[in-house]
Length: 517
Image (cartoon, rainbow, N blue to C red; front, side, top):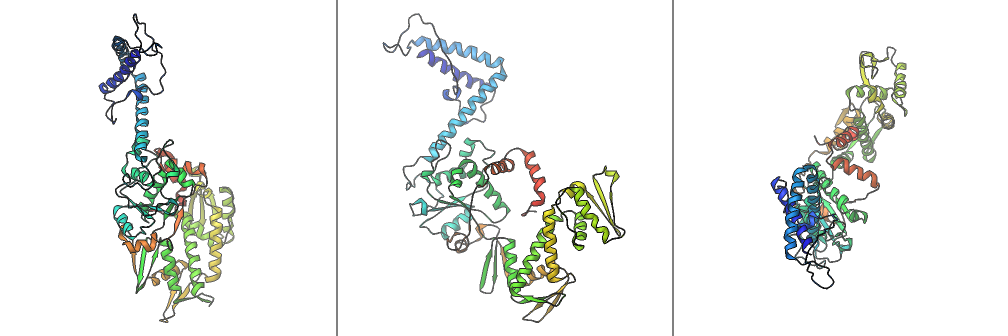
């Protein structure tokens, strides 16, 4: 009745007035409503009225008009004073009301985004979505394409029957850091939600309404593209995990390179694939003669070059420190094995160098309080920290040693000769790495290689034949194999806590495979 109406009105007006006076309303989209203020509140409003009037004989609702004004005045006066005198309490009340408002507005936006009559209603779909003709979600595909330029080419190159294209402009919001209501205000995310048709949020999300059973993320093949891919994956993992769980989310594999020689051309998804194609081309017209006089060519030469590349990769991963590089070179040269164990055990293995060097000496540096070791071999002094030795992977080193022995058996250590079979010209090569480098360089002769800066550099035909054509393309299905591990990774890498992210980078720096310098 009127006593309750007066209480509600005073509560809302007083809190809004307090916030306005203290300039707390700057970031709010609108004033607080009574619903926001009363969220979670329980109260008994008791009034004594001399001549009560009721709406009906059941006396459920009080109708005395004067009561509303009196209750409103009293509550406003005392509540206003209480808020001014107790700013800490006021701050908590205001914060709770603001949270309630954000939740209400977010739910409202989620409802607005998902309002649609059926799967074929286009009027509510994003304007930049180029939808497909197919109405069966099981046969339909949605490409989320990085950039308007690439999106335009994809629209022209696609199969209109079952492929829909949604261009995404700029960086996607990091939903790990953003509030739910802010996320729903982001235009690109709103477009994705509307295009998919599922809605969003616990109450609104409905997987049965999904319009496509293949949602394919298509970003540039460079590091910036990987960044945008990570942001989109974060959105799906946090806000629509059901799409991943049901196997609807995929990642396209566009090429990074296009190579052309004469009338023939090929695409390569990354540096490794390009190297393989160049080495294979070289192996068809080159032969290699080892120091033992053994000659290999064709497939055998190609496989040997791949083994050299693998050896170089593992070598580079272990030899990240100049002094450590010196030590590993000595260990490989004398084929010394390192077993699993701590720094002390590794030092015992290193001690086997004394069998090859009479003046070999290993001492703990007293000036570094026993945290460093000095290894003396002839005129070379190697200083290493015990911590560095403990982090030396015995497994990785053992793998490197085995690869070293295999290459030594096949090629020897004193150089090889590469011969051009067509021209008859021979080239003396001193190291294994130079064999690979020569073959890559030889494979590039007469070849034009284009490195795509982005998807937008490809014309519609090229996009179709590399990324869109179902008979040729490569797609990676997104799966979550370990929920706890995945959750932790997203929290560390995409969250707003800097220290855990820094620690993660420091701990895993040696495992990096794709570094953008």
